[in-house]
Length: 245
Figure 1: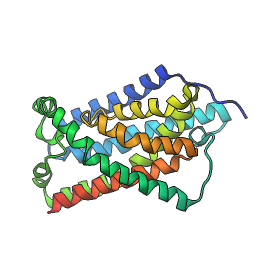
Figure 2: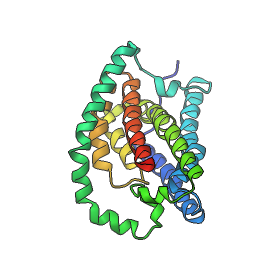
Figure 3: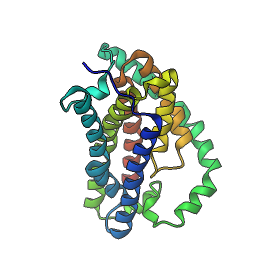
């Protein structure tokens, strides 16, 4: 078996930010050109067709390069198995910690960045403000239902699963020379990678650092993956309830 090849922090940052930058530009252009569709629906479709496949491609290509065949081995190097019940225990505890940050850190960040956020959104069509529930409600019922269904599938399953394999597996492994700082560095890159939601970085870092730390110590990315899914599940269900209320 070949030794893993360090891909370097600079290369990691350039790869991630180029990928997500291109995706965000594509999302903005498509959202402006197709005002008849909710921007959230456009985001999920483009994410499923472009952003997530690119992340899978990079992982599979690295496995082919290092181990001779396309697989998820590049994302699973050094991972230890543990009982499902233990994984779920850590995940629910971390989900609770995320909930605490959602009522402490998130409102504070929203308050501090409110003016900057409003100025940026003033340059964009109304649909790019995902907090504007009335915008979603303005579409035909079938479009609203399709948007919520696609959003649920993408945000609860496709996104978290892909991102955890990519960030907590692949990128963490191939930047391991930074030792205990590696998960912190990758978490910061992960937060900043959300170009389409640029005003929640502090909150994301606070939420994911405990998840990433426990997953790193336990050598099990599924802890972070399940925690991520739980957080997105709660946020998505809350959004759907607000839309149909």
